[in-house]
Length: 362
Image 1 (cartoon, one colour):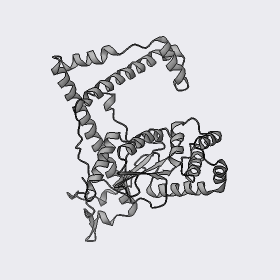
Image 2 (image 1 turned 180 degrees about the horizontal axis):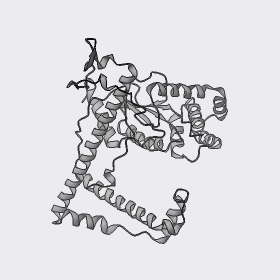
Image 3 (image 1 turned 30 degrees about the vertical axis):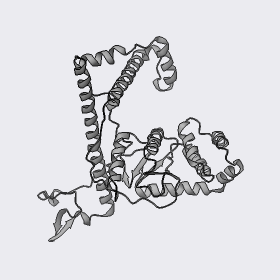
Image 4 (image 1 turned 135 degrees about the horizontal axis):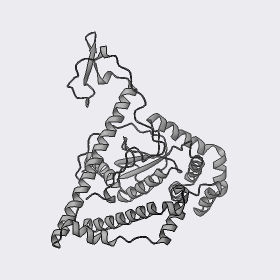
């Protein structure tokens, strides 16, 4: 049963300013083409061809080309893993519904009709108008024109919520274990420069996030990472690095304010205020958050004017560009770059796999 619970999260659209993977293609003369090799490109020693009798392997390619190949391999490996997870979720839900229906002497269709479809309540005019008022800046047509579309969306949302609750109830009565095959994913060497972190200093797994406080996808990532911190309190260290995007005019000021909170040991609580109040990123808001955390306001203002915070943000931005970061959030787990914001269960599969690879673990 495919449901909102199983919706695939787009691997290419869950980031702010996420650029395309392919920017250009080299022109190849037909005269240079020969019979294709049957060698696998999964190994660096794979033979690509020869010139003047001298072999050229993948190891001989220039650094930038090898980086692009790693990025492509990473993207497709994670996409396959994502599809395996989604297919598994579908199969689990179908199995649970069939078991429940069989136990009650019903067909799966009748069970779904009784537990979900018949419980979807049609929205009232007042509810539709309330939805319209909240989203008028996006809808941009009058209420009567938008009404049938709004009603469809509200009905769809209500069905999804009932569906998710029903499936969650079935799952609570049955143990679901993930044993997805995690491929060997390309890794990058992560920087040693200082950054705010939470969790054990010598944790087995290190998650590095490059974020932008004005990016809506980073706000989603914030919730996911916060849950990961709670799930792996003794195994996971989370580092935060700044990558404010030019189109987000309040992202850099927010990053500077968070760095100044960091100087007083309050980075993570300040970080949470910023992500949980995305519409409140004015200078006045920054001062209010500092007051709530009982920061020394004089020191806070001195820090903002000193240039120290700006230097820290620039350092993170330079590191991000060297790694090839072009959008936010960009998340790395032990040097493995996640493609988009993967679903929490899938991130957990990768973290659990990393823990098993540690000496003496698993």
